[in-house]
Length: 312
Image 1 (cartoon, rainbow, N blue to C red):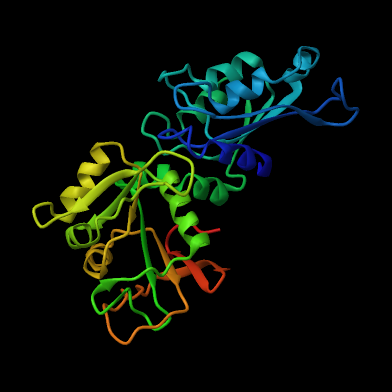
Image 2 (cartoon, rainbow, N blue to C red):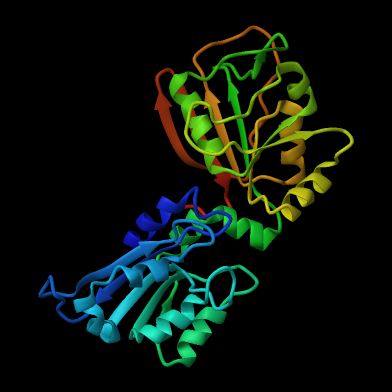
């Protein structure tokens, strides 16, 4: 299953809005290239609209190893689909291939699946095990899980602050990020669907909100205004299929999300500089847990998640 997760992560950009999924097929009898039980096929979901992880894993099996499938186990990080979408059901393919056992990382929260794939496999007489590295599998697809379970995007609040806790200097924008952290910010933008700032930040700074220091698609640009209440905005993004949102606004924008409980992750970059006056950084809520702390030059980047959220 660890290998499934490694493979799945390769679909970070191409698979969305579908989840990232990896699959590994293990022969329990000696294969053409090994006298021990070994991997005879593996794959991941490369791009939305194309073959799922299971399809690509079966396609990678060497012709001489095809007879081993009837005694094989397929590991897959997310429940095999059971419905017709842009591709046929993977559960049907697994049944057709005649594998003996299926090991599933976690159940798919998508309404069209939600255990139906597992039941279809079991009804066909296949031995199914569910919940192997479940938290890790859910964390990998936290955007997908949040979108389908909470009916809103996965929300990341992100700000940079001085060493003494200000996000600007005397009301004017500060360059707190360094080259490394700026590049990481643009990598994050390439991995998420949309990015939001408040109307004051938009009017004062005119931020580009692009991925010019990284490779990938620019996120959808969103501006929070007085005419667009926060709950309505979040519902609009959900209806548009936006699965993840970065919030890079000022203190008031961040506090509006915090007050509404609309956040899943908080990223705080702290620089070495200090200022004598400015806008204080938002206060972290009580229900946070530190996920990671990394240093880049003189800057420190901390990631927090809600204590009730999936955390590895």
